[in-house]
Length: 403
Image (spheres, rainbow, N blue to C red):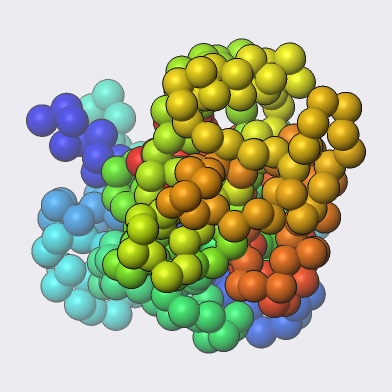
């Protein structure tokens, strides 16, 4: 029961995040903005109005007036402040999804209904009237009702998410995978960062700034996105998109891998190199166009890289690194030597990022770069003829799960 409750709570957070993303994307102007966790969950600021929206997601719960009573009382208190002070007048919105019971609100809310069901409450056996405590007149309550919108028939979790993806696809002219794994993933990260800003002034973002922030070419390892998808499903989707070729074409593939020095263990890297070579090489006698991949490891000291190469050599795993003899300069033609069954080359190791650039620039065949980075992306190669996939990971073992 506790686990199900936790899942429901997490879905509630995502439901609010998705509504926030959707609210930003649907703004008319790039200068219009949304404020997060300020007056209400979402405050939408357009050229003409500000709407404070509270979001409720109770997919397994019956709707009762008591569920939104506190929200309406809070909104009325803010409304009172706009009457007596200098605060800007606002619109108020309650947006909620419930399992059933919505027919209880299938009437036009008048002052009497407002007072009875939303503004009257009991505390320690004493009855209170919130509108009286605020010293509001019936005319004030009429004005408040004009400013209040209640939608308790909001769409369900999955329908709202699909709408977010559809809007992203439309804005950026992209396919579903990119909409979810690039733009939606990044959207969640942006909203999460804004929501935990201590200073309220920093919890606002314009549509223009939001679109710039989410338009990135890296698939970030955003813990909220991975939490929503599930790590296994997340890795499976990446594998299906980038690493599921049935008949592997003889392309020149570059795997750029970043280490976490604090948790580095040599045998884990070595096993990863074996796996990359096994999956992305074709070296049989009958193969008309044999090939093997290139590897570059970011964050490994030169001494450790040398020790790793020695260990691979002792174990009979043949590599080349573009240096023909001790002290020789890096030679692109040497690293580009065709791997065949006869020469037994299983992996091509590039020692530096400059070696990577020089080799990619020299090759004329189809090239693909797969960068797995723990921190920010450490390598940029923006020439349109080369596919460059950037995937953020938590740890080295994630790569084996993806490829």
